[in-house]
Length: 67
Image (tube, rainbow, N blue to C red):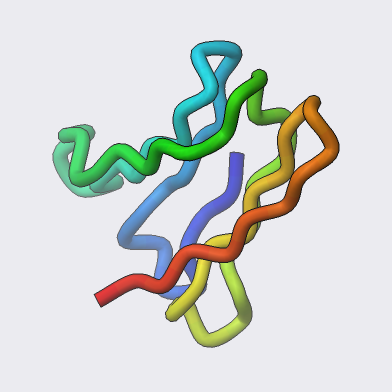
């Protein structure tokens, strides 16, 4: 898990290979990021909050841009 720099979002990795972005104000799911082919065990926001990095068991790291 990781919180965005402004604490408005939370990201989570999951054993279903999906990265999820949550709204911390109301707990709603904002977005799901798919592309990993094995469980996601590490997620982090960039310091400026514009990117998310995720790492999965298959050995890949993905960088996702946020709007």
